[in-house]
Amino acid sequence: MKTHNLLKTVVLSLVVLTISCKPIQKADNIPSSFLIDGFPEEVGMSTDRINKIDGLIQEYIDNGLIPGAVGLIARDGKIVYHKAFGMRDIEENDPMEKDNIFRIASMSKAITSVAVMILYEDGKFLLNDPVSKYIPEFKDPEILVKSNPDGTYESKPAEHEITVRHLLTHTSGIGYGFIHSELKPIYDKAGIPDGFVLTDAVLGDKIRTLADLPLLHEPGEKYTYGLNMDVLGYFVEVLSGISFDEFLEKRIFKPLGMEDTFFYLPEKDIPRLATIYAENEDGILRSNVEDYQYPVKGAKSFFAGGAGLCSTALDYAKFLQMLVNDGSYRGHQLLSPKTVELISMNQVGDLFGNNHFGLGFGITTDKTVHKNLSSVGNYWWGGYFHTHFWIDPKEDMVAVLMLQMYPVIHGEITPKFQNLAYQAITEMK
Image (cartoon, rainbow, N blue to C red; front, side, top):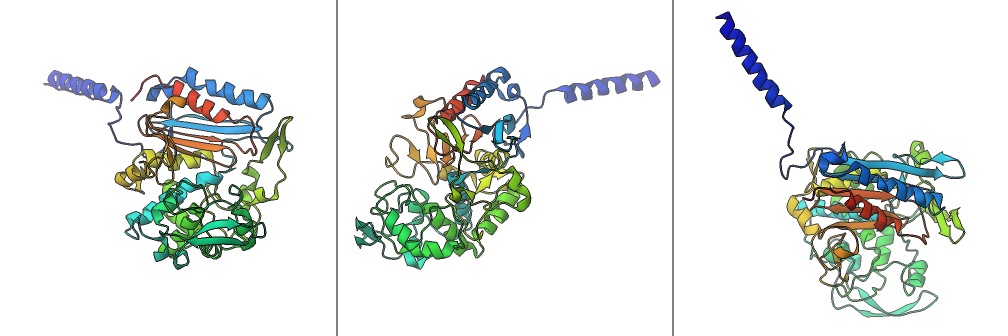
């Protein structure tokens, strides 16, 4: 009897041991709850190949083209590359660290788009609603006919109103003063900022003023990069009843654990802010442009949805991982998978050239995928100071490259970084 029981115990122990020693397989289509550190080989990538990125970034630093950078790549929810190179501040001899904070500028637009789509899922509006339904000042828009150097202009009535979809796709006709010379004197006279604000301006005041100014073209007629996301930041305030920064903190940053993403930096985090450098033919120089101090100085009352946020590579990667996870991260379903599908599909026909444009994102197509290593359906954007991200649903990959440079002459580091990320894949999905 004792021998039988002993044998039974040994057999059961061996069964349990055999089961527990089996490798854990990730179920198909079940995303990670958190971004976790991993090894490239765990997710069908090569350590030797992905480490080629080290040489790329170090070469740019050694050649005096950039001061430093932080890069992050994750696949299947596992961080397979997260490194810092060079200097945060050359003059202070302060090395770049992985948790340094960067002005992400137009990478703010992706976050603003998601904020808008959260309210869309709350049933607050429809994409083809006229913006004037929520911000009355946008009623009866005008089209610019002639612009004068003193800020005066001639205009004519538009045939259509601006819709929410027009704002999300940059087809409203609203431009940027620093890009569109015919708008600059008009915007300057009206006190419309491009997004980097040091004054005591308030978002709602400036957007209502902007609403009375002329458009560059009929809404829906062209793709024109402009202050659309700043308008949508105020749109979020109107529909939610709280300030835009508060909405982002409550509905996006806190659920995702994005503790290092801000419009204006807390005092304790200022030493982590990367310094901006400018590239010229003789190398790089510390930028002395006063406007670039916006995350530190200013009245801190203007929350520019198009350009105002600062973040770390890891924080922003959490946001990207939520999107590649079909809207879910850390047990929070920020968006439905159907909404993520909607924002990452073409919304503008051929207005964005051979690429497509969704609700806030550029999208790689079969006509452009040949230009660099990538996938059809990869969606992406970048920022004024040479930050960049992409989301690849096909390969379950997200990536971020953070620099602080403007202007940039040798800007090919970004596509090279992408190529080296993709060439590290050894097992395709």
